[in-house]
Amino acid sequence: MRVDKFLKISRILKRRTISKELALHQRIKINDRIVKPSHEVKIGDILEVQYGSRILGVRILSIQEKVKKETAMEMYEVVFEKRLSLDEEDISC
View 1: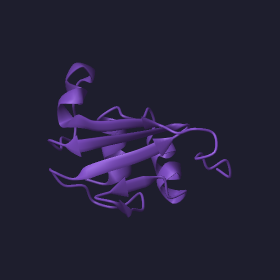
View 2: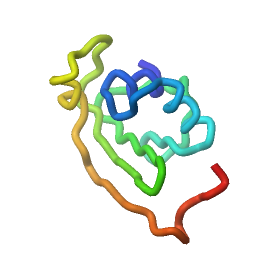
View 3: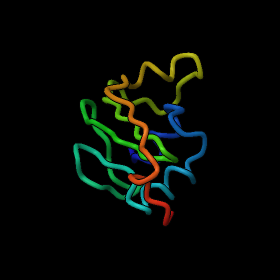
């Protein structure tokens, strides 16, 4: 499954267009590599998403085409969550 679609289906991000833009602005990493929106995710991958002043790191536990809102969090586990200070934040985006 594409990373932009995974972020939408797992409800980490609300819309697929947002995840696509984040990837195009080099704010999504899989296993410490910056990826494009079309990059395929696999079970066990560590996915990092930087949006706003926050970096969220999750491990992918399952990949499903359709999932209910209540069970979407079962697709991943949060590994870390960081808040960036103002001097660390990239304001160009």
